Length: 299
Image 1 (tube, rainbow, N blue to C red):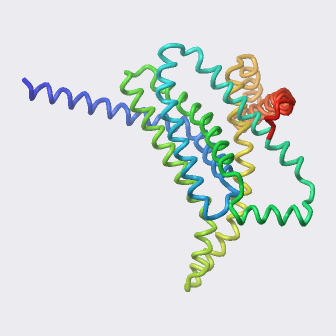
Image 2 (image 1 turned 30 degrees about the vertical axis):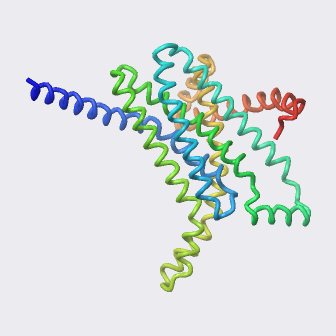
Image 3 (image 1 turned 135 degrees about the horizontal axis):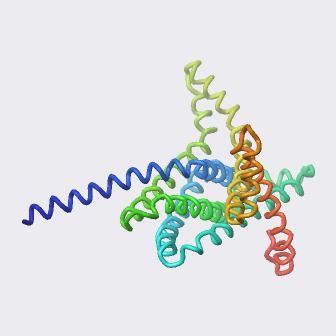
């Protein structure tokens, strides 16, 4: 009797794990786009840190991301059980935050494009050499951004497993959270250390290794610049999409407009989502900035 019960238990566990495996694959495919944005944003967020501090900063952000998931997974399950109607408004709030951050970043970039004086350039260089970039602020900003993107991924995953038993929901969300954290921050660590790899290979004796090393050293700055642009664009793409999906008339209008174009419909839809995100972020900045300035909370 006990043996039969044990076999039944093992069969149930195997069935749950099989379900979790299938659901995890489905959720991973649905969240692939957000994961790409997450990678670009985080690689860009930790750029500019002095070389010897790059991996510690990535590790600190990864730990913050893991803490985000520990909060988000039970919160999503609880919210879905008690007040599922709150999920979308919270996601929209997160989307608005991403758009606000994106616009603020653009404003800061264009406002500081003037040529630096020799004294300012030297002071900035000394700050970099000393590792004086505000690591805490960078880490805090990256973890905040990760929270919004992670929330979207967790909610998308929850949508995939909503009709499944609670244990399947919990295990699938946990699996996605772990895979996402390890995958994203593992890749971020590799990206930020590309220049070190290039330098190492360029000092090798073999001609092939030297050529590869020089190629990596040449390409690394372009990659980081590209990630900076992609990361900013991702803020508007993801944030705009979250906002648009929560506003029925706007969502239907953009969807209809995209479908009326016979080519590149997803691209057209994404562009309009981003435009909406930029507009929403600019409006949020126009409201928040004077308040923050008034109370001394500006950047």
